Amino acid sequence: MPRRSIWKGSFVDAFLLRMKKNRESVFRRKIWSRRSSILPEFVDCSVLIYNGKTPVRCKITEGKVGHKFGEFAFTRRRKPSRTNKGKRGRRGKK
Image (cartoon, rainbow, N blue to C red):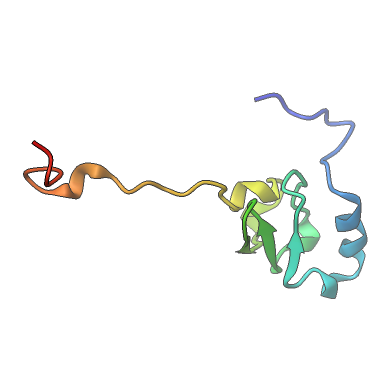
């Protein structure tokens, strides 16, 4: 996957840069910018990341710094595996 140039730095939306200065405004804040990078100033904050339908709660830890917000709010549902259907599989089909 191509990386962003090092001289440009990581991308952070303008409103997140303003929130960075006032740490209290970051707590329980809805974030629509999934493409923004997580900065070290956001550690130990709980944010709501929009996944296209509903906001998903996410606690920012040190391991998430440098990643994008969108990586932690999945946009698709997981399909359950079909291996646990039983011996006959689907009932009613012949």
